[in-house]
Amino acid sequence: MVALRRAVTAGPQGEPGILRGTRYGLTRRQREVLGLIVEGLDNKQIAERLEISERTARAHVSAVLRSLGVSNRTQAAVAAVQRGILGMLLLLVALAGVGALLSERAAAAGPQATASRLSALVRSAGGATSGWAYDMDSGRRLLDWNGGARRAPASVEKLLTTGAAFDALGPDARIVTAALASGTIQDGVLDGDLYLQGHGDPSFGYAELGRLARAIADAGIVEITGRVYGDESFFDSRRGGPESGFRTSIWVGPLSALSLNGGRQAPFGRGFQTAPAKFAAARLTAKLEAAGVTVGAGPRAHAAPAGAQPVATVSSPPLSALARHMNTVSDNYYAETLIKVLGAGFGGGGSTAAGARVVRTFESRHGFGSRVVDGSGLSRANAVSPRALGRLLREARNQTWFDSFYGSLPLAGVSGTLKKRMRHTPASGRCRAKTGTLIGISALAGYCRSRGEHQIAFALLMNRVNIWSARRAQDRIAATLAAYRPG
Image (cartoon, rainbow, N blue to C red; front, side, top):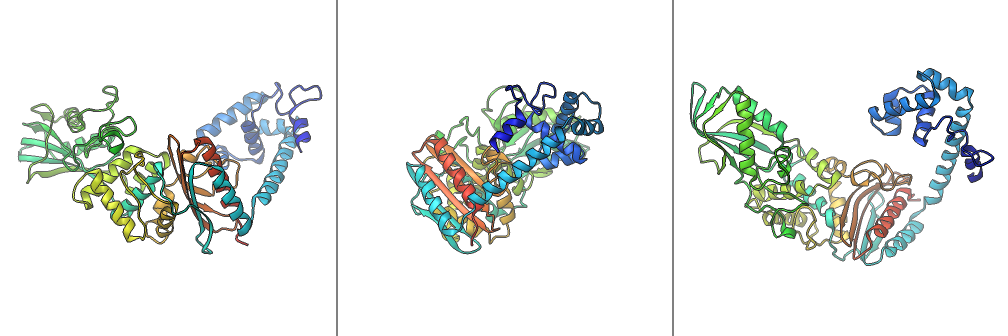
């Protein structure tokens, strides 16, 4: 097979072969696209088949046409046949199919062989490593290596934040940002002040602020005699999590119940906002004036007084969408904001500590526990065992919010922090999991759909390890789980 592949890609004197020659200059991806052109697929179908954007598909098609010196897709297909490219394309596809089949069969294994391989792989990571895996359909435990030992989970901690948030709020919940009026409104004039009151929407941005300004104008207000205040009183005043001494850090940004644009000053400056509520009030003032609403005084930050009346509101996307963003790209700012939302709504105060208590209560109700210090996993003081995470993964499957929980996780080889991992392995497209990384710490926990169509839950926590070696072990473990056949 190797010799044949070389013959296809190089000539007898070592010069480029039919598919790599300077005459056609097609990359591997372009050869795939050419094969799909010959099949008669349009750009949209090519994009779907190759899991790329339609815009990228169009670019590849254009590149193929240029390389072949033709002006349309029909001519490209004819050229592929006439110049012998089609035969080589089909041969490569066939060889790839045989190779994938042989690899898949070699990787697939029954319970005993799988358990043995998993144990060897988890041991190979070294350091303080723990692992657990469980076939949720057969009830068979496939791995339990130091499964009860608590380790720092890094960003896998976000699974706990996600579960607690879905349990308390539901996946359809939305976070409201409101404009409240203090004073009297007569003939379009607010004789008083306007308060921009936040409740911890981490996605609140300039587009939402613009909609709010237009809604205020549509409510008939043309003048505000006072000023716009930013109200962030739903949270405490701490700008960061425990890992930064509760100060703003580059890993999170300034936490606030009223934080615009993730706490970043752009495009009105560089770096992070130092006073998020006042910054948001200033931007709303500008938006209002652009909408034709006159504001009498400059922006400030202050809590809205009792009795202030709502004028307009905007809502965040549903919690399911917030969680999907948070877990797919591992957004620390979203996680630390959401744990404060939990604290404010269910823990007696909008603090990280209050939110952590809500998470621990959630854990207790579902039969497990951990040391919860923050929402993102940035703190090394967080500690959880693979078995505890496994209990979360198993319990989540029985909840009404499971689909949102499961869908929030990156898909191996396809999306988020797993997009470039596990490609061309049985795990690609079959495993969804949350990653976690700090210096010397690597973790992975989630689900794999096995070749036998069983759902496998797993948790791998590796401390005091080489990150890259740990990831290799994790990827091989996930591939082994995806290839598993229950027998």
